[in-house]
Length: 124
Image (cartoon, rainbow, N blue to C red; front, side, top):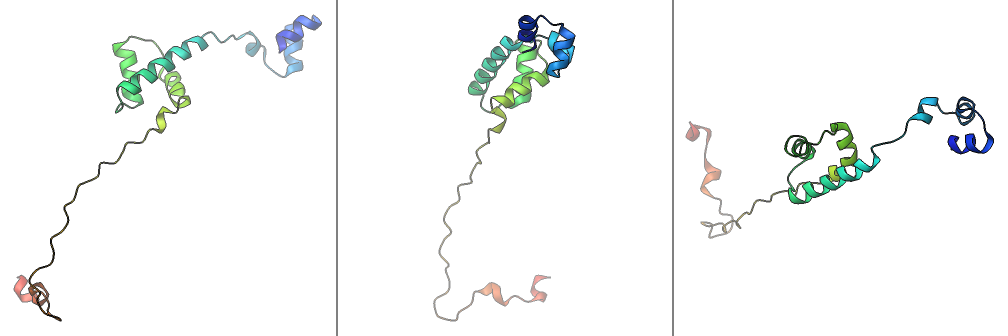
């Protein structure tokens, strides 16, 4: 935006930055690595589909140590979150339980099992 103002009106960089409310360092800073972000995203998607149990830590260590990429962990984690890979939830492992046996030994009404008649003395 400031670049268009400078070209259109022929004003200085400093004056254009003051008018736009940005610093000169922001004007001069060019994003060089945005094309690498797509490469990082591609690698993260491939890793998480191949290794479903891996979280961010294992994915990053694989990219850094095995593949040899020099990317910063903060940058890789930012892309990991943008892809919403941090929202995967592990499915719970459910225990299979057998159905309990029917109660046995009680044959008449108002009959109570033997365990109800234990006293404190019988425990010791």
